[in-house]
Length: 212
Image (cartoon, rainbow, N blue to C red; front, side, top):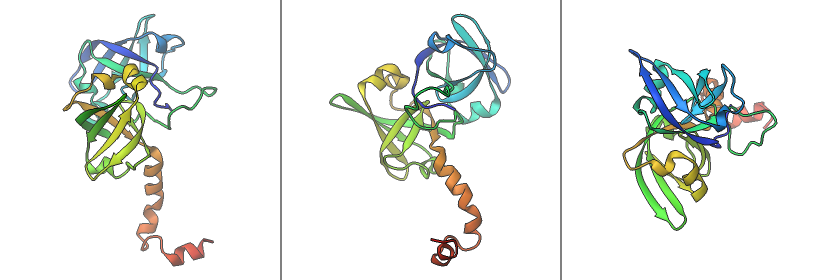
């Protein structure tokens, strides 16, 4: 589990591509301070497993499914990536619950300066938009952010200078692809309600029968 609070920017050192998978070597420092084999590190919001490491870098395998659902396949040597270690039990929960399991991608459609903030407009599919609500949480490339505005096909977030300086968002431009992970709460609620849809949904009678 992650919180969406980025610890540092790493740099892609090497990408070894196979037929339908890849192995990433990423230069880093902070996330390597207490690293162990098998640890989870979120790379642009994607939970990856450390398969080897040195004092200055680590490697991680990326499977076919991850390449299909995320923007990791577009990375190249020299690309900057957001890095976050899995949350420690004694740490502060500064963001929101982030699993590192990407729901899909979005496209940066507009970037607008607003005094000391920057507005980013992200277009994405209806399958992802259905779980995005105004003032709710969204992880963009692993960054925990608050949704400030939505319509049927896009949403906006407003970025403070610290977030801009500490993450890859400052490097993004219109047309760039970003990884998106919805707040998991909405997905679980929808799943739990599915049996009731088959019986006519949640009605007044249903609520009365169940003590509401």
